[in-house]
Amino acid sequence: VMTLSARYAKEVRAALAAGLPVLSRREFLPAMAARQPLLSVTGTHGKTTTSSMLAVALRGTGTPISWLIGAPVPSLGSPAAYNEGPWMVLEADESDGSFLAGPREGAVVTNLEADHLEYWGDWDSLRGAFAEFVTGTDGPVAVCADDPGSGALTEVPRFGWPTVTYGIGDSDYVMADLQFIEGWSCFDLVAPSGRYPVRLLLPGRHNALNATGALALVSELGLDLPSAIEGLAAHTGVQ
Image (tube, rainbow, N blue to C red; front, side, top):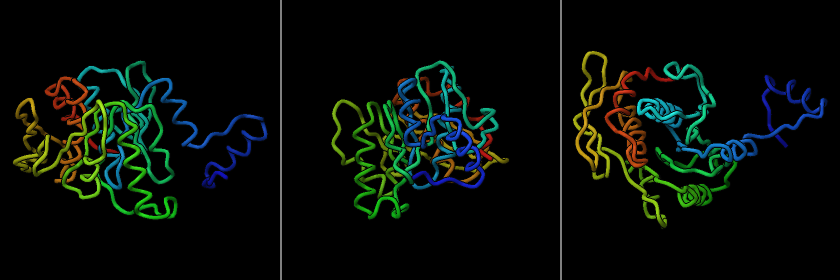
């Protein structure tokens, strides 16, 4: 049985009365992914911001993409859009299991805490679902090493694709020397390919870390990192 807010219940009843199919998010996403593989951003916190950053950064490289994000993104013009291109950036929600939708060709995991246990039942089931998310991604996965829950996902065995880490500590992609200068969050991204200065209009260490995760995936997808960083400087956050 689908749980609906009052806002949508009338529309759903009208669709059913007209004989139109009504799909849950979990049913809908695989249909979209069959048209355009997903780059899924998941985690207990930071999904909306990080997925929007990933979409903006990818556009900075000149890559045409689609996106489906849980809030309006002024620098993208809308919370969702379909364009011809290699991927759809998805804010992937673990609360109902829909984050497991695929095919996925890349992913970011921001953190992992014991949340939505009314759906998953217990912590072990939730952790198992995130392990399934990692192993079921046919492409690079970037996980935050600073968080114990997401950092533990580096131990999940995978074949053929890397699981890379990002954070402020010992990671493949490091957010270093963070400073706040005239409204900008300024830091260096220390990546396997070099050291890159990054400027964000969004304040806060957490946002700098979210940007690091998004840029780590862009880099692992083989796209131009300086162009992605330049594009991300125009990102003004989500509503």
